[in-house]
Amino acid sequence: MIKIVATGLKETQDKLERAQKQIPFATALALTRTAQIVKKDIEAEMANVFDRPTKWTLNSLRLLPAKKDKLEAWVRMKNEADKSTPATTWLSPEIEGGARPAKRREKSLRAKGALPDGEFIAPGRDAKLNQYGNISRSHIQKILSGLVAQFDPYQNSTGSRRSAANKRAFFVISKGNRPIGIAQRTSKRGIKLLLAFVSRPTYSKRLDFYGVAQKAIDTNLEKEMAKALKQAFASAR
Image (cartoon, rainbow, N blue to C red; front, side, top):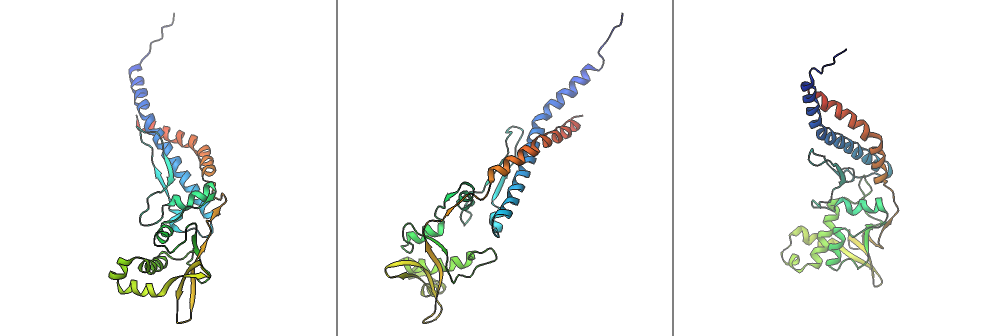
């Protein structure tokens, strides 16, 4: 007769319990690392499909890491205005397709009566574009400052010399009775068309946001989970 006795069972059970407690940590770690890959892959796709994307666009994603008590990681577009237009405003049409919503500057121009309802703004034929193919934010602000000075009676009475100069320089130009854009006086006869009034811009789907993300998840989540478990079990000894 052979007698088999379990020795060291208590020690083994303790190790298993410690390892079991590490599983939520490992899962959160794997989810967060996978989300980091998702974010990186989507940013690389932006650089590939967009023409000269701005730093603001390439930095428009936010990663929310997973936690042991909340086993989900998120990669999403920043939606805080932060003194500018939220990323969701211009990226959502590129992801879903369809019409672009009005930007803050367009809403401001409409509120002042400078931009007709249903119209949007785009760079005019004489606009000076930056390296990304856009009018710089500072130049846009200068233009808007002049137009707001024209349409805001309070700013007319208390505005600075700079606002007064902008007021004289920038104006809404019309063709017949139809406003067609915002122009700048460069001399008594010289005029530059800086912003053109256009119909609502529409976009086809360009950024495969969800497809790129799913591919990154399918490729990396299982591997990251295996690495995280190995790391967690090693630290549980």
